[in-house]
Length: 249
Image 1 (tube, rainbow, N blue to C red):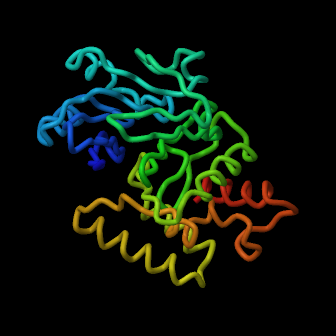
Image 2 (image 1 turned 120 degrees about the vertical axis):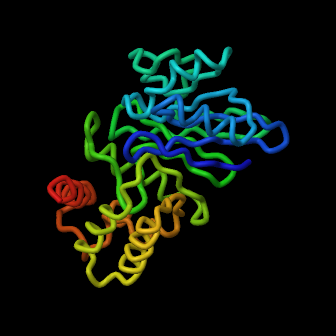
C-alpha cells in the first residue's frame, strides 16, 4: 500500500491509497475532482473507491465530478452521515470498529465525533487518514459535537501505534505548532517540530505525514492531561481550555 497526498483548494489534502500490485486506488476526502483525477492518471492507477471522513464541502466537493468520470465507485462514509444524507452518492455506511478489505488490505473505521457528529478516520497498515479530527500539531474545531466527544475521539487516535503515519485533512501545521509553542514554551520537541515545519513550507514542501509518536510529544490536544499545560478540574475542562485557547489564537 502506498499513499500519495493530493493538494486541493487552498490548504486541503486529498489522498490516493494505492495498491501497488493491482494499481487500483481509493481516494480519501476529494474536495475537488480535477486534482484527484489528474493525480490518479499521473500515478497510472484506477480509482475504485472514495473514503470520506466527514461531510464538509471541502472534503466531499469532488465526489460528483469523480463519479461522472469513474463508474461504479464504492463511496464510503459514516452511518451517521448516511442517515442524514450528507455525503453525495454514498453507497456504504460504516459504524465504529467496522473492518473492510480494499484490494486485500484491511482497513479499520474509527468513529471520531466532535468536529462533526459523523466524523470517522480510516486506519490501514499503519496509516491513519484522520480528516479534520487530528492535524499535525492540532485538532479540528468542535462544531457539532461536544468537548467530551472530541477529547475521547483524540484519545482513540492517541492509543494507535507510535509509528503510525498521520495523513490529515489540511496544511495547518505551522500555525498549530506556533500555538503549541505558546502552550509549552519549554518543550524542545515542539520547538524543533515548528522549525522543521517552517523550513518545509518555505521550500514549498508538505508537512504530512506525521506520526502518532511525534504527536504525543508535540500536539497539545494529545497532551491535555499533562498538568503543566492546561488548567482545570478534570481532563474535559483541560481539553476545553486548550481548544478554546486555540479558537482565539
